[in-house]
Image 1 (tube, rainbow, N blue to C red):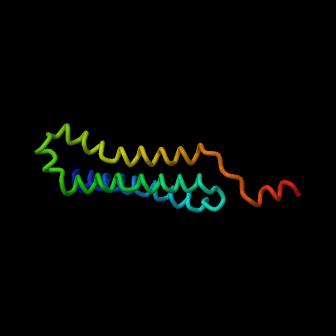
Image 2: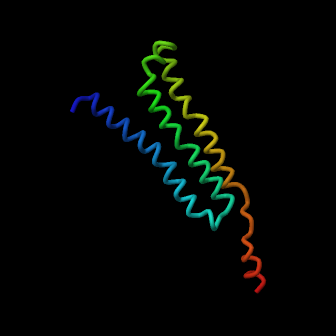
Image 3: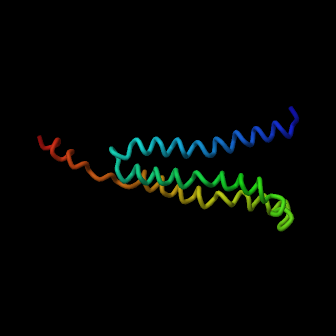
Length: 116
């Protein structure tokens, strides 16, 4: 196996991991929606918002990298490629943190059980 092929496989594995990690987080958050309510919904939305960032970056690298390098140069193209997923990650992280920091609403049946 050539070095280029090995580097391509490692890059594909890393991109797959970048896509699967938020999806696993979304599945975990979805399982807690009934118990945690709004907090889990915010975390779920944050995970889903983070998912397309690496996909879009990979598509731009696959189909538009040559024209991007010709337009702005190789060093600036690297910075542009690293800035593409940034809004997805920042908004997603903000939603996850908001879900973690907001106080959960008490369950309607919890008050009845506490008084009995």
